[in-house]
Image 1 (spheres, rainbow, N blue to C red):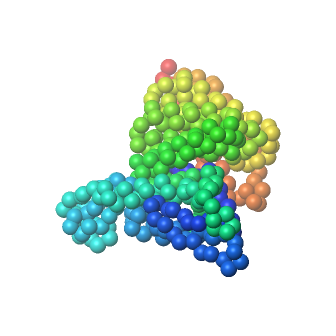
Image 2 (cartoon, rainbow, N blue to C red; image 1 turned 45 degrees about the vertical axis):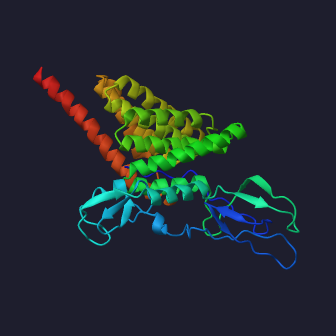
Image 3 (tube, rainbow, N blue to C red; image 1 turned 180 degrees about the vertical axis):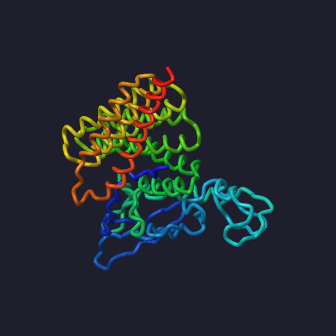
Amino acid sequence: MTTPVCPFVKAARPDDTCPAKKAIAAGSETAPTRKDSGEAATVSPKCPFGYDSGNFKLGSLSCMICHALLFDSTKCIPCSHLFCQVCISRFKDCPLCGADIEKLEADTNLQSMVDRFIEGHARIQRPHVDANGEGEQVVNEDKKVIYEDVSLDRGAFLVQQAMRAFRAQNFKSAKSRLTMCAEDIRGQLEKSDNSSELCSQLGAVLGMLGDCCRAMGDSTDAINYFEESVEFLTKLPIDDLEITHTLSVSFNKIGDLKYYDGDLQAARSYYLRSLGVRRDVIKNHPGVASQILDVAVSLAKVADVDSSLGKEDEAVNGFQEAIKLLESLSLKPEEASLEPRRLSVLAFIKTQLEEKQSGETASLVST
């Protein structure tokens, strides 16, 4: 199972000289500090919940199993230690103290606090007053409070938490965080007339949601998310290698789901679309080893479906083309890390081809 990659970059820290009277963070207030020069007050840079983005743990708001924010907060009885419901349901003894778990109880109060933290984190509007500290407050609606020791904006923060939950196989938690992130990006898109950066971010997040649904066994929703991801990614420039890679992977994932559902023609159609994207990439960027490897993988996928559809000649041609690409691929010193993947893919495709050819030989002998 592959781990998604965060589509966000770290946001810039807020201007420390920005005037402010106070910052309201998840219902609590932090007192401003005033400068002797008469300059405006500044907001305390520390998160009022004590969060530090450099740590895996978020104190009492985190699950010690998945290292992400609590989701469906659940208390072990009798030891009272707290975890995500999905995480702790795999255990008979408390992972922290070893006590027998007699029963589990939902902690709605703590979950409410976690939800307030998420809603307020990096999203709180910064109130302003004039330089003399007088007059009515003016709120800059475009300004987000991004605490000095956090530095991640809301989107990156949510994806960070989702990725931790995903790695721990708490897919419900990951899906919930990614859904919030997607909703936020959609809201920004409505105001920004489909900017390329936002389309790229939304396409990546939707792809992650597809991964969550696939891991949860929900192929229908997974396909819907992957198709929506493709919709946004196809709006973007085709000369961006990262975007085209993500787009081709989304096509392949839809093809995989169609294949497992037995819809071989649909699977082949999506595999071919992925192959088309990847062929265009190596035309525009010849000699990029990672892209050539991607083409070989796509060729193998199409060939495998062709074989299942009884198109043996086409399947053999596809496997042979993939093998030729991989055997002729010369890696530069800085691409040495790709060698294990090249050898692995090459060995797999050769095995597939040998099985097809030996099967054909056996069939001829029997006739």
